[in-house]
Length: 169
Image (cartoon, rainbow, N blue to C red; front, side):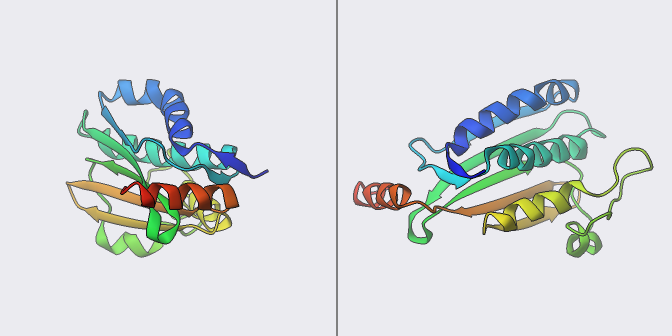
């Protein structure tokens, strides 16, 4: 069920769910969340699932080296009447030959019993169901950035975006 939701609050709650895993690999988590972000009309449970998937994938990518930095950013894109969520890790990165298939169901580079290849496919489905877009940029041995752009839907959100634009953000 969709309702207006605070994306920053969803990020903070989801980080709480992944906290144990992030501590196990000694990851530094940096939250760069834009204050006064307009509400996003979404299914909050699905948004949390999407965020958790991105966070856990980032943690898994950093696990072989131990440590690393996971940065989560939110920001308003007023001209597009949308918000952006970026999850960036300093993990091993995605091989260029795999970038075109990472959202395909059952595609995985993980060993048996480590994953079945549904996480990113489900994430992609959630983003598309919310009429959003997802982009991935990755460099081997440097890390990966997933950027999710979600439209603002309700009239209340449209008014908030215009008010933020007037204030010069």
